Amino acid sequence: MDISPCGHEFAISLLQIRSENDLYKRIQTILTELLPDIPMAMYLAPSLSDKERLKLLALSSSKTPPDLEYLLARAETLKHQHILCGDNHLCIVLRSNKAIMGLLWIGERLPTARSYLIAHLINVFYHQLNTLALGRIDPLTQLLNRQTFDDKVIEIITGEGFVIKREQQGIRKWYLALFDIDHFKIVNDNFGHVIGDEVLLLVAQQLKDNFRAEDFVFRYGGEEFAVLFQAHDRSEARSLLNRVRKVISAFNFPQVKKLTISIGYTVLEEIAQVSELVHEADLALYYAKKHGRDQVVDFEELGIAGQAKAETDIELF
Image (cartoon, rainbow, N blue to C red; front, top):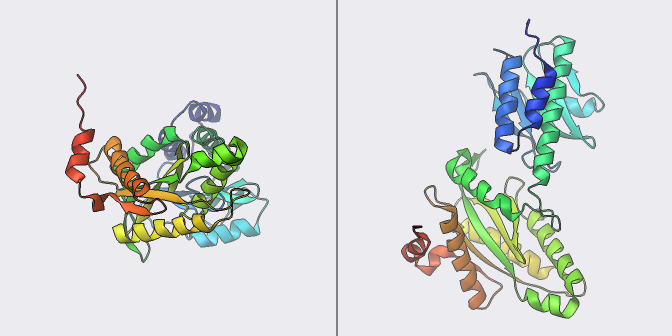
């Protein structure tokens, strides 16, 4: 391999990117340029969390992916090494506080200088990804923020994430649920905003702990939360949401003691607009609040699908 690219220029190009999707595309382009015709596979923790299983991000050849469990076991054994050399491959390990956050498998041994260059660029990519991720986080709850919500919905309904097929589990669709803490104003009025903030933080933690790593939990605004999650059908979605509702109603909040939440949800349709989907989930949530609170309502049950769509079809002149 006689390519001598400037690693500095590659690093600068990564640091200048302000979109996570563009950053993913850029690192793949760089790797393809640096490793022409060489098989490679890149894995990453989806939400940059050490609690998540690594997900295949890119595969550059028609060969099947390498044995991830073997690579992880070897990386765990060689905890202090970032570049692992095999007989006919190379593995670059991304670590954060000793946790394995990503792997780049390269199906060929490389010269030492080239290996270190690629390892450096992978680290630049990862740190820039973390920097961009910080802009997506609500500072109080550490959930994804409202500004990120629209982008994530659009990404799901227009991209490869619309339906997810998991091993041995079949096809699952995406759903949107809106959560609202019942009588939250009373909490602030009776206990003050410091306790109110603590309640928001604890509810956020319960939501995060009770959804899968590949689902997305947002602080949507005030005492309202949004979750994009996966289920096989509406019945399974309701069951999952009811389980979360019961977890929160059973939780003992400091001073406040007991709280409940109301939930409205809808399925993400491939052709829907974000405003339409939010409006559907919001109508279901409003119905839940108006009819007793502490319950889960499916938008489809309301029987107003056509009417709800018409209300969101507003033309701007």
